[in-house]
Length: 84
Image 1 (cartoon, helix red, strand yellow):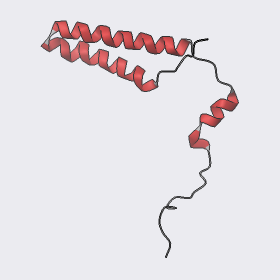
Image 2 (cartoon, rainbow, N blue to C red):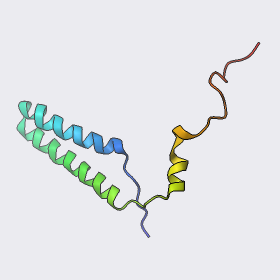
Image 3 (cartoon, rainbow, N blue to C red):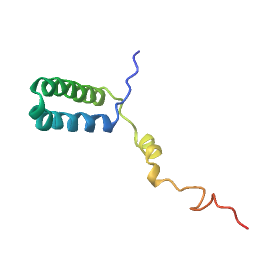
Image 4 (spheres, rainbow, N blue to C red):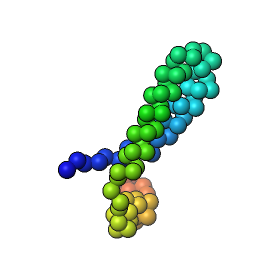
């Protein structure tokens, strides 16, 4: 059985922004490099879509464990300071 590893959302954002930058800005400098970068970033975007498609569906309990911002921290702010 093959394990499917999620690609991060940053990977998808990088592919979108990279494509836009290569089409809008790199094309003014060199058309060949713009096409090359565009193909590369499109392949990155396709890889992120495929990663999302074959990713296992998480249960509500697993999503709750991943929600770090909702967990109560054990140490209050400033716990690293020494008390005199």
